[in-house]
Image (cartoon, rainbow, N blue to C red; front, top):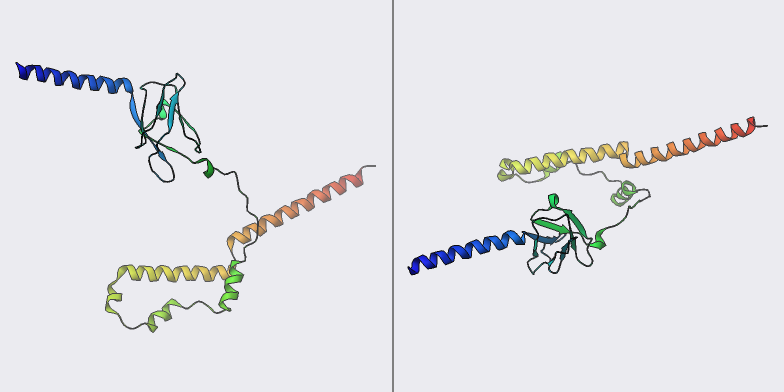
Length: 199
């Protein structure tokens, strides 16, 4: 009889826990997007007055049904989620990380500086460099080393080609500036022509 009462008690206890979890909704973990560390003290709220705060493990509970869920913490950009977007984890972005558009103007003199620093000495040829090393049997069977030497040779060849042809980014920049200058000249000549034709 005692065994029957205990099994009935444990069955009822398991049912109550399952029901409590159902009414409470599901768990949500809130992390920092940069550090991937769970955040404590994040406020999670809905329009209908539900409110919860994350614990030291970054866990809080959200209702099973809601329209919009707001996740907020001071010094972080608030996040608003609808029910379809909600997953088991969400990340907040620090408000200091958000910057507006940045435009950088200038001319790059890296090739000139490198040539001056090297004193116009050419880069060593990788095929000649292999001769100067002593014989190493392990070097012969090292496939990764052969692949790296082949890659280094092709990169040096590309840099030498760039020295002859010029930097493609600088060339594109100069071309765009020249096109803007020519367009401004055309517009200036068009205005002068219109002014001469008017009485």
